[in-house]
Length: 174
Image: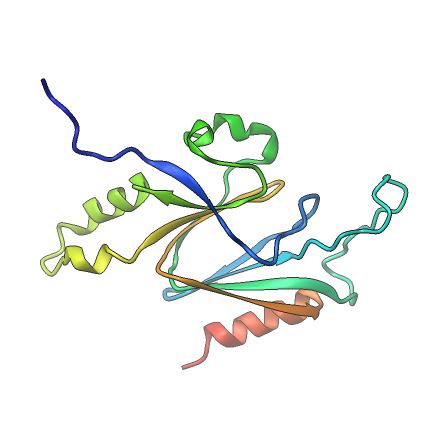
């Protein structure tokens, strides 16, 4: 009898702090050939959750918001894909994906696909792929996936524009 040696792919929820706003996280992605930056609105508990005290977020305003800046050591990513209303259509939905959470995909088929592409390179080295991780963040209206070795999260109380300028400076430093 034939048994596949390939391990099954599944999503594992990971601790992620600070959490993003589940209603309107407003994620934005910036990338170059070395790093990828992700920003999102941090979840702040509202004192009145009965729906009568909603705050509208205007990313073009001069209002300062609690924002997270995530710097990933990686530049292969996907963004958009689906919203929370169609999560059940995702391939890993019944394999550990949870709405509004951050995940690592174990035995990632995407990493295997990328390795397959790179194997034709004359200097391909399997060891260079060991530390890569497939992260998936499920926002309200978007999904963010990235292949990276690590990430760092910083928090700010600033405008969306000011944070975008900061990211542009980081991406263009020597």
